Length: 179
Image 1 (cartoon, one colour):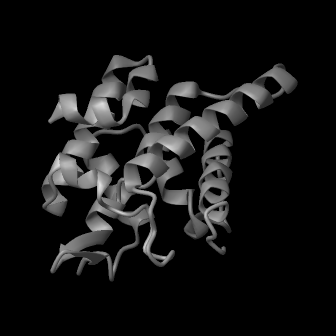
Image 2 (cartoon, helix red, strand yellow; image 1 turned 60 degrees about the vertical axis):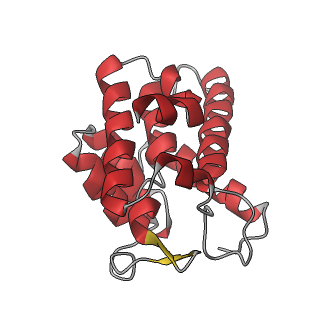
């Protein structure tokens, strides 16, 4: 399964820390297993159930958010190099994992993707954070997963979490989503 995950999410290879890279893959593997999916299903899962007939899948969205965040980080780092330090490994891992909880929040029911029984109780920031924590992902990345969505609006967000939060909502809103 590792090879398939690295093929559909090549940005994982940009994580310099080998241990973190391995744990990111492990988190996806564990989520796929717990959610009852196959790797090939990931490209069939819409990135959101909030857009009717969403034609962007979870993998496309995950890659777009990660790459948007990387470009934003480049600009911020150049503009404010002595004032802002961005941990690129945390940023990349967070981008790749920010929506991993959706494979627990969603289920395939009668050929249609719907909220899973788990998803009715726990939105993906919660299930994704728990999954990442279980797989040994560092707290800085677990934090990012937990606060990337509206659930994190009233609390602290690290620099990396701020970037992922806005990268995620840019990608959601340009496709017609409303926050």
